[in-house]
Length: 323
Image (cartoon, rainbow, N blue to C red; front, side, top):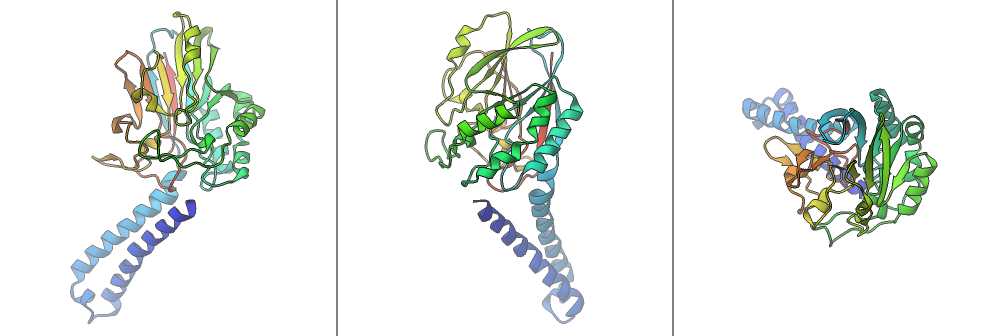
Protein backbone atom coordinates (compact mmCIF):
# COMPACT_ATOMS: atom_id res chain seq x y z
CA UNK A 1 0.00 0.00 0.00
CA UNK A 2 2.75 2.60 0.77
CA UNK A 3 4.33 1.74 -2.58
CA UNK A 4 1.04 2.50 -4.31
CA UNK A 5 0.81 5.96 -2.75
CA UNK A 6 4.48 6.68 -3.49
CA UNK A 7 3.89 5.69 -7.12
CA UNK A 8 1.01 8.19 -7.29
CA UNK A 9 3.24 10.92 -5.84
CA UNK A 10 5.93 10.15 -8.43
CA UNK A 11 3.38 10.26 -11.25
CA UNK A 12 2.03 13.63 -10.10
CA UNK A 13 5.55 15.03 -9.88
CA UNK A 14 6.28 13.88 -13.44
CA UNK A 15 2.95 15.18 -14.77
CA UNK A 16 3.53 18.64 -13.27
CA UNK A 17 7.30 19.13 -13.55
CA UNK A 18 8.03 17.60 -16.97
CA UNK A 19 5.63 19.79 -19.04
CA UNK A 20 6.80 22.89 -17.15
CA UNK A 21 10.42 22.16 -18.06
CA UNK A 22 9.47 21.56 -21.70
CA UNK A 23 7.51 24.83 -21.81
CA UNK A 24 10.40 26.83 -20.35
CA UNK A 25 12.91 25.19 -22.66
CA UNK A 26 10.75 26.01 -25.67
CA UNK A 27 10.39 29.66 -24.66
CA UNK A 28 14.13 30.27 -24.56
CA UNK A 29 15.59 27.64 -26.94
CA UNK A 30 12.94 27.27 -29.65
CA UNK A 31 12.04 30.80 -30.77
CA UNK A 32 9.70 29.59 -33.52
CA UNK A 33 7.65 27.33 -31.26
CA UNK A 34 4.07 28.00 -30.18
CA UNK A 35 5.30 28.32 -26.59
CA UNK A 36 7.81 31.05 -27.51
CA UNK A 37 5.22 32.96 -29.54
CA UNK A 38 2.76 32.85 -26.63
CA UNK A 39 5.27 33.53 -23.88
CA UNK A 40 2.89 34.98 -21.28
CA UNK A 41 0.47 32.06 -21.51
CA UNK A 42 3.28 29.53 -21.44
CA UNK A 43 4.95 31.19 -18.45
CA UNK A 44 1.64 31.25 -16.58
CA UNK A 45 1.08 27.55 -17.28
CA UNK A 46 4.65 26.75 -16.22
CA UNK A 47 4.24 28.63 -12.94
CA UNK A 48 0.98 26.80 -12.18
CA UNK A 49 2.54 23.42 -12.94
CA UNK A 50 5.68 24.14 -10.91
CA UNK A 51 3.53 25.37 -8.03
CA UNK A 52 1.84 21.96 -8.12
CA UNK A 53 5.24 20.28 -8.10
CA UNK A 54 6.41 22.36 -5.15
CA UNK A 55 3.19 21.65 -3.24
CA UNK A 56 3.58 17.90 -3.69
CA UNK A 57 7.23 18.02 -2.60
CA UNK A 58 6.39 20.16 0.45
CA UNK A 59 3.37 18.09 1.47
CA UNK A 60 5.03 14.72 0.91
CA UNK A 61 8.63 15.19 2.05
CA UNK A 62 8.99 18.39 4.10
CA UNK A 63 5.89 19.18 6.15
CA UNK A 64 5.50 15.58 7.41
CA UNK A 65 9.00 15.88 8.94
CA UNK A 66 8.15 19.03 10.89
CA UNK A 67 6.85 19.09 14.46
CA UNK A 68 4.75 21.90 15.90
CA UNK A 69 3.82 22.40 19.55
CA UNK A 70 0.09 22.93 20.00
CA UNK A 71 -0.32 24.64 23.37
CA UNK A 72 -3.76 24.44 24.95
CA UNK A 73 -5.08 25.60 28.31
CA UNK A 74 -8.03 23.57 29.57
CA UNK A 75 -10.05 24.43 32.66
CA UNK A 76 -11.43 21.55 34.71
CA UNK A 77 -13.33 22.43 37.89
CA UNK A 78 -11.86 19.57 39.94
CA UNK A 79 -8.23 20.38 39.11
CA UNK A 80 -6.75 23.13 41.27
CA UNK A 81 -3.02 23.10 40.48
CA UNK A 82 -1.85 23.25 36.84
CA UNK A 83 -0.88 19.90 35.31
CA UNK A 84 1.18 19.80 32.10
CA UNK A 85 0.41 16.88 29.81
CA UNK A 86 2.24 16.17 26.56
CA UNK A 87 -0.18 14.35 24.29
CA UNK A 88 0.65 12.63 21.01
CA UNK A 89 -1.22 10.12 18.91
CA UNK A 90 -0.90 8.16 15.69
CA UNK A 91 2.85 7.59 15.55
CA UNK A 92 2.26 5.04 12.77
CA UNK A 93 5.87 3.86 12.78
CA UNK A 94 6.60 1.88 9.65
CA UNK A 95 7.53 2.80 6.09
CA UNK A 96 7.44 6.59 6.62
CA UNK A 97 8.41 7.13 10.27
CA UNK A 98 10.96 4.96 12.04
CA UNK A 99 13.16 4.98 15.16
CA UNK A 100 14.92 8.25 14.28
CA UNK A 101 11.55 10.00 14.08
CA UNK A 102 10.43 8.56 17.43
CA UNK A 103 13.72 9.74 18.97
CA UNK A 104 13.07 13.24 17.59
CA UNK A 105 9.57 13.24 19.10
CA UNK A 106 10.94 12.03 22.44
CA UNK A 107 13.54 14.80 22.53
CA UNK A 108 10.90 17.44 21.79
CA UNK A 109 8.69 16.14 24.59
CA UNK A 110 11.54 15.99 27.10
CA UNK A 111 12.41 19.60 26.27
CA UNK A 112 8.83 20.60 27.18
CA UNK A 113 9.21 19.07 30.68
CA UNK A 114 5.59 17.89 31.11
CA UNK A 115 4.31 16.17 34.24
CA UNK A 116 2.81 13.32 32.23
CA UNK A 117 2.89 11.93 28.69
CA UNK A 118 -0.17 10.40 27.06
CA UNK A 119 0.01 8.45 23.79
CA UNK A 120 -3.30 7.99 21.99
CA UNK A 121 -2.76 4.74 20.08
CA UNK A 122 -2.16 3.74 16.45
CA UNK A 123 1.52 3.34 17.21
CA UNK A 124 2.06 1.13 14.15
CA UNK A 125 1.43 1.71 10.46
CA UNK A 126 0.59 -2.00 10.07
CA UNK A 127 -0.65 -2.16 6.49
CA UNK A 128 1.54 -5.15 5.69
CA UNK A 129 3.11 -7.89 7.79
CA UNK A 130 6.17 -6.03 9.12
CA UNK A 131 7.34 -7.32 12.53
CA UNK A 132 10.21 -4.82 12.59
CA UNK A 133 7.77 -1.93 13.04
CA UNK A 134 7.48 -2.59 16.78
CA UNK A 135 11.26 -2.18 17.13
CA UNK A 136 11.00 1.42 15.89
CA UNK A 137 9.27 2.32 19.18
CA UNK A 138 12.43 1.65 21.23
CA UNK A 139 13.27 5.37 21.85
CA UNK A 140 10.10 5.62 23.95
CA UNK A 141 12.05 3.87 26.72
CA UNK A 142 14.00 7.08 27.37
CA UNK A 143 10.75 9.03 27.61
CA UNK A 144 9.12 6.56 30.01
CA UNK A 145 12.28 6.48 32.13
CA UNK A 146 12.03 10.21 32.83
CA UNK A 147 8.28 10.97 32.72
CA UNK A 148 5.26 8.76 33.56
CA UNK A 149 3.93 7.70 30.14
CA UNK A 150 0.57 6.10 29.33
CA UNK A 151 -0.65 4.56 26.09
CA UNK A 152 -3.78 2.88 24.68
CA UNK A 153 -4.70 0.78 21.67
CA UNK A 154 -5.86 2.26 18.41
CA UNK A 155 -7.41 0.36 15.54
CA UNK A 156 -4.07 -0.22 13.79
CA UNK A 157 -2.82 -2.27 16.74
CA UNK A 158 -5.61 -4.70 15.86
CA UNK A 159 -4.85 -4.53 12.14
CA UNK A 160 -8.09 -2.71 11.43
CA UNK A 161 -8.16 0.08 8.86
CA UNK A 162 -11.00 2.42 8.03
CA UNK A 163 -13.97 2.17 5.73
CA UNK A 164 -16.69 4.72 5.09
CA UNK A 165 -18.62 3.67 8.18
CA UNK A 166 -17.43 2.52 11.54
CA UNK A 167 -18.65 -1.09 11.37
CA UNK A 168 -18.12 -2.25 7.79
CA UNK A 169 -15.58 -2.28 4.96
CA UNK A 170 -12.62 -2.55 7.32
CA UNK A 171 -9.21 -3.61 6.06
CA UNK A 172 -7.83 -6.39 8.28
CA UNK A 173 -4.09 -6.89 8.72
CA UNK A 174 -1.99 -8.53 11.43
CA UNK A 175 -3.28 -8.22 15.01
CA UNK A 176 -0.36 -6.87 17.06
CA UNK A 177 -2.40 -5.84 20.13
CA UNK A 178 -0.79 -8.35 22.50
CA UNK A 179 2.75 -7.79 21.18
CA UNK A 180 2.44 -4.00 21.30
CA UNK A 181 1.26 -4.06 24.92
CA UNK A 182 4.10 -6.39 25.92
CA UNK A 183 6.65 -4.24 24.09
CA UNK A 184 5.39 -0.97 25.56
CA UNK A 185 5.39 -2.36 29.09
CA UNK A 186 8.99 -3.55 28.62
CA UNK A 187 9.84 0.02 27.57
CA UNK A 188 8.32 1.30 30.83
CA UNK A 189 5.09 2.64 29.30
CA UNK A 190 1.85 2.06 31.23
CA UNK A 191 -0.50 0.41 28.73
CA UNK A 192 -4.21 0.78 29.39
CA UNK A 193 -7.03 -1.27 27.85
CA UNK A 194 -10.32 -0.30 29.51
CA UNK A 195 -8.35 0.34 32.71
CA UNK A 196 -8.94 3.01 35.35
CA UNK A 197 -6.02 4.43 37.33
CA UNK A 198 -5.82 7.10 40.00
CA UNK A 199 -3.00 9.48 39.09
CA UNK A 200 -1.38 11.82 41.61
CA UNK A 201 0.36 14.95 40.31
CA UNK A 202 1.28 18.00 42.38
CA UNK A 203 -0.49 16.58 45.45
CA UNK A 204 -3.80 16.24 43.63
CA UNK A 205 -5.52 13.20 42.20
CA UNK A 206 -7.60 12.44 39.14
CA UNK A 207 -8.89 9.36 37.36
CA UNK A 208 -7.23 8.29 34.14
CA UNK A 209 -9.35 5.99 31.99
CA UNK A 210 -7.61 4.33 29.06
CA UNK A 211 -10.20 3.01 26.63
CA UNK A 212 -9.67 0.22 24.12
CA UNK A 213 -10.45 0.41 20.38
CA UNK A 214 -14.04 1.05 19.34
CA UNK A 215 -13.38 -0.19 15.79
CA UNK A 216 -12.17 -3.51 17.22
CA UNK A 217 -15.35 -3.72 19.31
CA UNK A 218 -13.27 -3.56 22.50
CA UNK A 219 -14.23 -0.22 24.07
CA UNK A 220 -15.89 -0.85 27.45
CA UNK A 221 -16.82 1.91 29.91
CA UNK A 222 -18.12 -0.37 32.69
CA UNK A 223 -15.11 0.15 34.97
CA UNK A 224 -16.08 3.83 35.25
CA UNK A 225 -19.00 2.78 37.46
CA UNK A 226 -16.49 2.39 40.29
CA UNK A 227 -15.60 6.09 40.36
CA UNK A 228 -16.39 8.53 43.12
CA UNK A 229 -17.53 12.08 42.33
CA UNK A 230 -14.70 13.91 44.08
CA UNK A 231 -12.09 13.38 41.39
CA UNK A 232 -11.95 14.58 37.80
CA UNK A 233 -11.81 11.95 35.04
CA UNK A 234 -9.46 12.32 32.10
CA UNK A 235 -10.02 9.70 29.41
CA UNK A 236 -7.54 8.57 26.78
CA UNK A 237 -9.54 7.07 23.90
CA UNK A 238 -8.01 6.77 20.46
CA UNK A 239 -11.09 7.39 18.36
CA UNK A 240 -13.62 10.20 19.03
CA UNK A 241 -16.19 8.12 17.16
CA UNK A 242 -17.69 6.97 20.48
CA UNK A 243 -19.30 10.42 20.80
CA UNK A 244 -21.55 9.69 17.82
CA UNK A 245 -22.42 5.99 18.08
CA UNK A 246 -24.27 5.60 21.38
CA UNK A 247 -24.42 6.53 25.03
CA UNK A 248 -21.25 7.11 26.99
CA UNK A 249 -20.55 8.13 30.60
CA UNK A 250 -19.45 11.56 31.72
CA UNK A 251 -15.71 12.15 31.50
CA UNK A 252 -14.45 15.63 32.33
CA UNK A 253 -11.90 15.59 29.50
CA UNK A 254 -11.30 13.09 26.72
CA UNK A 255 -8.11 13.05 24.65
CA UNK A 256 -8.39 11.45 21.22
CA UNK A 257 -6.56 11.19 17.91
CA UNK A 258 -7.33 8.91 14.95
CA UNK A 259 -8.39 11.63 12.49
CA UNK A 260 -4.90 13.04 11.76
CA UNK A 261 -6.78 16.31 11.31
CA UNK A 262 -7.50 15.01 7.83
CA UNK A 263 -3.73 15.01 7.08
CA UNK A 264 -4.38 17.46 4.23
CA UNK A 265 -6.31 20.61 5.17
CA UNK A 266 -7.12 23.25 2.59
CA UNK A 267 -8.04 26.88 3.37
CA UNK A 268 -11.82 27.38 3.58
CA UNK A 269 -12.39 23.66 2.90
CA UNK A 270 -10.88 22.07 6.00
CA UNK A 271 -9.85 18.39 6.13
CA UNK A 272 -9.63 16.59 2.81
CA UNK A 273 -8.69 13.14 4.08
CA UNK A 274 -11.95 12.03 5.70
CA UNK A 275 -11.29 9.04 7.90
CA UNK A 276 -14.89 8.22 8.83
CA UNK A 277 -18.13 9.80 7.71
CA UNK A 278 -19.72 9.54 11.18
CA UNK A 279 -17.24 12.00 12.70
CA UNK A 280 -18.20 15.61 11.87
CA UNK A 281 -15.45 17.60 10.18
CA UNK A 282 -15.31 20.13 13.01
CA UNK A 283 -14.29 17.31 15.37
CA UNK A 284 -11.24 16.40 13.31
CA UNK A 285 -8.98 18.50 15.53
CA UNK A 286 -8.97 20.90 18.46
CA UNK A 287 -10.77 21.43 21.77
CA UNK A 288 -14.55 21.10 21.94
CA UNK A 289 -17.17 21.61 24.63
CA UNK A 290 -19.74 18.80 24.69
CA UNK A 291 -23.45 19.06 25.40
CA UNK A 292 -23.05 17.27 28.75
CA UNK A 293 -20.64 19.92 30.00
CA UNK A 294 -17.52 17.85 29.40
CA UNK A 295 -14.70 18.49 26.90
CA UNK A 296 -12.81 16.60 24.22
CA UNK A 297 -9.49 17.46 22.61
CA UNK A 298 -8.60 15.81 19.29
CA UNK A 299 -4.99 15.99 18.15
CA UNK A 300 -3.93 16.05 14.49
CA UNK A 301 -1.38 13.37 15.31
CA UNK A 302 2.34 12.97 14.86
CA UNK A 303 2.48 10.44 11.99
CA UNK A 304 0.74 9.48 8.75
CA UNK A 305 -1.16 6.53 7.34
CA UNK A 306 -2.22 5.99 3.76
CA UNK A 307 -0.08 8.48 1.81
CA UNK A 308 2.94 10.13 3.41
CA UNK A 309 1.23 13.49 2.85
CA UNK A 310 0.51 16.38 5.19
CA UNK A 311 -0.45 19.85 4.01
CA UNK A 312 -1.31 22.90 6.15
CA UNK A 313 -1.48 20.41 9.02
CA UNK A 314 1.99 19.49 10.32
CA UNK A 315 2.61 16.74 12.89
CA UNK A 316 1.97 18.03 16.39
CA UNK A 317 2.75 17.52 20.03
CA UNK A 318 -0.11 18.89 22.10
CA UNK A 319 1.07 20.49 25.34
CA UNK A 320 -2.03 20.67 27.51
CA UNK A 321 -2.10 22.72 30.70
CA UNK A 322 -4.98 21.42 32.81
CA UNK A 323 -6.07 23.76 35.59
